[in-house]
Length: 258
Image 1 (spheres, rainbow, N blue to C red):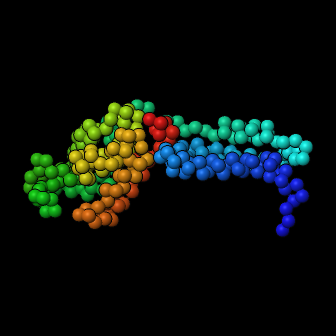
Image 2 (tube, rainbow, N blue to C red):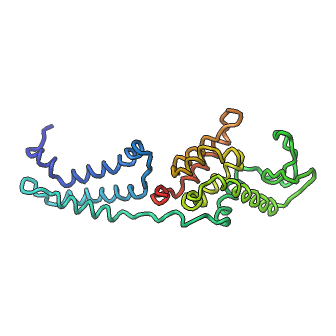
Image 3 (tube, helix red, strand yellow):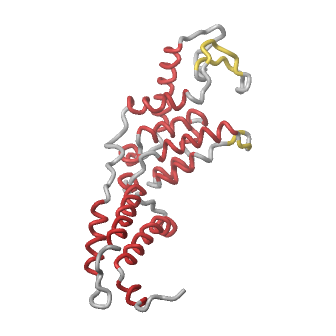
């Protein structure tokens, strides 16, 4: 295997090679930024920028680059600028505080999918002390023999989730309530509180990170709540994975800048 006769010139001036280098830089940029600053970048924007640069590489292979006669840097700048301008910027995932209706639309299906429903009151012997429980884990005012329809259970769950949400929101800063919660993220945090308790979650790393603007870090910290009695529980592991997925949904530059 031998180098081409003008290898040095090609390495310096080849349009396709320079576009390739820029594409590689874009690929590693998010990891470098996160390692140095802890700042997450917009994955959607970088994906489309990389795709546009790949197309630019294909096009540049067909262009007479005049290697040996003149440098192609003006053409490089033009193609990169076109590639970057063609990359669509995703819209913000939210526009202000999440309404109660938007929250419930996400939270009721999420929490009900993990909480077993029993229409007739039963004695929960695992609780300390044991208590009469009904529907999706409701205990307040429940007594032996109580029965609720599916609609009544759904309404009871919605009321309970709103109550937990209002309590948990006291732990969030105004900036978080205004700019860092989407309906899905709101539902993920409240589902965690429903499962682990408002008091504990209000003081958790997941909430502290979110309040500090580290949205992705806060979402990942939700996943730590997968133990009971210092032992990882498979059901909790699966539930937290869903919580984290909900929390990360829609993460974009607008949220990271908040």
